[in-house]
Amino acid sequence: MSDLLVVSDLRVTFGGRPNGRAGGRTKSWARRGRTGLVAVDGVSLRVAPEETLAVVGESGSGKTTVARCVVGLQRPDSGSVTFEGRPLGPVGRRPPELQRAVQMVFQDPRSSLNPRMTVAELIGEAWRTHPAAAPAGDRPAALRRVLADVGLDGDVAARRAGDLSGGQCQRVSIARALAVGPRLLVCDEAVSALDVSVQAQILRLLVDLRSSHRLALLFITHDLGVVHQIADRVAVMRGGALVEEGPAGQVLGAPRHEYTRTLLDAALDLGAEA
Amino acid sequence: MGEPLTAPRATTAAPLLRADGLTVDLPAPGGGEPVRVVDGVTFDVPAGTTVGLIGESGSGKTMTALAVIGLLPERAATGGELAWRGENLLRPGTDWHRVRGHEIAMIFQDPLAALNPSLTIGRQVGEILRRAGRPRAEVRRAVADLLDRVGVPDPVRRMDAYPHELSGGLRQRAMIALALAGSPSLLLADEPTTALDVTVQARILRLLRSIQQEQGLAMLLVSHDLRVVAHVADEAVVMYAGRVAERGPAGATLRRPAHPYTRALVASVPAVRTRTALADPLPGAPATPANRPSGCAFHPRCSLARDRCRIEVPRTREVEPGRWSACHFAEEVIGS
Ligand SMILES: Nc1ncnc2c1ncn2[C@@H]1O[C@H](COP(=O)(O)OP(=O)(O)OP(=O)(O)O)[C@@H](O)[C@H]1O
Ligand SMILES: Nc1ncnc2c1ncn2[C@@H]1O[C@H](COP(=O)(O)OP(=O)(O)OP(=O)(O)O)[C@@H](O)[C@H]1O
Ligand code: SF4
Ligand SMILES: [Mg+2]
Ligand SMILES: [Mg+2]
Figure 1 (cartoon, rainbow over the protein chains, first blue to last red):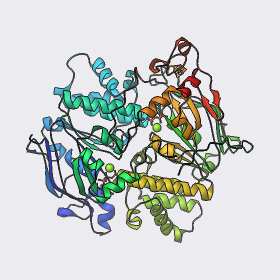
Figure 2: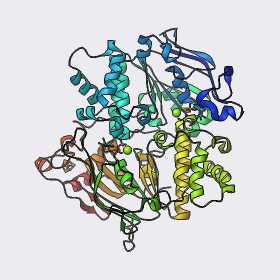
Figure 3: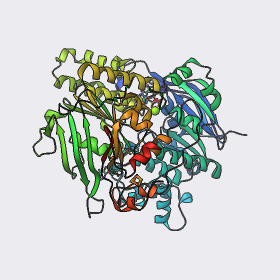
Figure 4: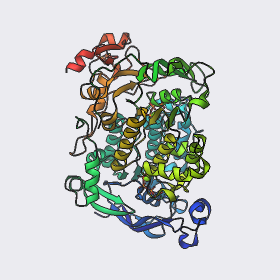
């Protein structure tokens, strides 16, 4: 099967003036003249249609940075990202259908939503940006449906994002990303703020969309139990690089790299405490 | 780790914190009746212990913690009692500046929203250390030490980073350092380890435990991670739709739940070492505080529900020594 997403040899440095670009937000380290921090150091990944690739690994190992490159919010120093063979540039220069095809749920749900906008406005905005995905008929009914899919009551629609709980914000982010009908969803710790029961509901939704809409997932998580449940393949990152990659059962069942074993050993299990 | 308290603890000394019938009302979005998002929550946090607060997303856990540190949204109204060393924090005139940071500190659920985006994390942590009386000359060293203790690699370099320059897990550790900098007696930890890989998580949990043993730190640990709660909490409080579903020793609560909601939660935890099927979702819609079902708020989703559940709000009863449940049929649940 041909790959949907291909990430090749991605490299991202922060603060060290790569290509002479050290303006704006990177001032703290750059101005102090420190050497740059290599956040991503030659990462290559592939995701096939309908496939779920889980990315696990050390905190600070570059997972979010890779994800931001995929959705075009971070420009890599070198390497490339392609979708169905077409290069994916910065998000602003992507043709609308590619913007729509690749959506992301961010790690900090609260700060990724404008706190003053209502949930109805947030999802309405997504539909306005991608009219092809907007519901043809009754909008309020469609809105209620996308909210119900993520376990939210319809009365949430009138609330401002700033007045929602952490897990409610996270579900609004998921609903907003799914509302435009993406073909690849990048989930950065997308279910970490949810109780396990709601979490299972959302994972079921994603698994259903995988077969009904051929949705592919790039699923970043620290929860190895969830990886077991939904991933086809797993990539393990440490220090900006992949240390191991393979089918989920194999990586979690018979890890080859020592770091993967360390991770599995440190994972707590319920009921094993006695 | 995590020896669950099995013996009922001595009740002579007043607990450090006691929530007694705590209520929080928030204004409804379009005006109208205020919404009771915390509805009669009762629990104790004795010094040196950890209470795990778990429950459905939106059930009022963060609001409960924010009430304890006096940071509820502006138009919130509170009721009931929050006794801190025997003094009610909810009475008007509480000196929050004295309490906040040094007596009670909080690790916020969303570090990016809670940290000041325009100051380096070293400045933010240093400011608290200075206010706690550290001499200026020592502050930089102390900040680096603290960041090192919470597992920030290369702390001397990282202290000059702004929050947006850190990964999610590094920000979370910076947030933990900020909360610990004032040497509080009570730490309100709202989902403190969600962005951490399991090895860093284990390190943080060990650190908190050692501070607990050395300094008698008490903790209210809000977490969706039942594995973490099972390992570190002495007591567990389970919330559903703004109310306490059950509370009791953490080990017993998670092993033999006394409320059907807790039982459903425990059954949904995926195993780490083997592949488990995705749990069946609870039937029906989640309860919202705005339209809380009559009687037992869980009844539309409960497999044990019968007529009485739809009519009568269950009274919270002691169903086993030290275990309290708000289910009419708790004995049946424990026994099954
Ligand atoms: N804008 C930035 N400026 C400077 N450094 C950055 C920036 N964004 C990320 N970094 C650094 O790059 C490295 C990789 O960060 P990234 O967020 O990709 O990690 P991660 O694997 O997602 O970690 P976590 O699991 O903690 O979220 C970290 O050391 C981080 O501090
Ligand atoms: N500022 C606010 N104004 C009005 N309602 C709010 C506000 N913040 C939260 N709420 C509502 O109060 C209820 C309780 O929220 P809270 O944040 O305590 O939930 P939580 O148990 O911490 O959930 P989560 O696990 O998702 O973080 C939710 O239904 C939420 O929508
Ligand atoms: S009181 Fe009734 S509805 Fe509520 S949890 Fe118990 S059995 Fe279920
Ligand atoms: Mg990240
Ligand atoms: Mg919360």
